[in-house]
Image (tube, rainbow, N blue to C red; front, side, top):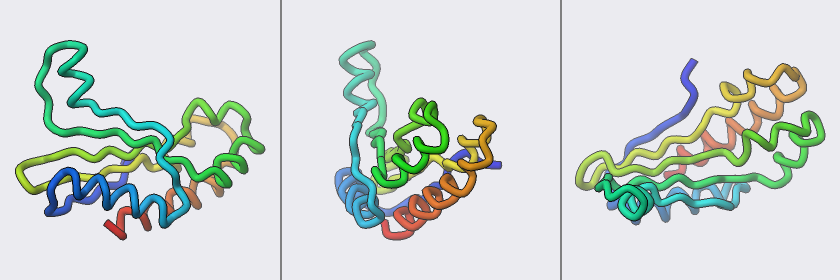
Length: 128
């Protein structure tokens, strides 16, 4: 089983990031964390790296439901979405598959919740 969903688009990196944010918003997700890997690697370890952004996406209603079922599920939140430049004008967007990640938790009540979140993340990717 794969642990992520992905899609590659023909776009400038900045445009792909904007489209990803908008698609997530339309599916009820807010971006609550953001890590600019390229900038962090350069400033912390002096390494040049391709444009690579990790967006922490959260659907508050779904997160609340999941926390009602399993209070430690917060260790696996938010849902990470990666936007990375593959080549000039080619950008890959990848999102965690929450069904795969929730298999680490032995709580069958989370399966339905994870499936619903997975559907919304896949829909967001489809909008990009």
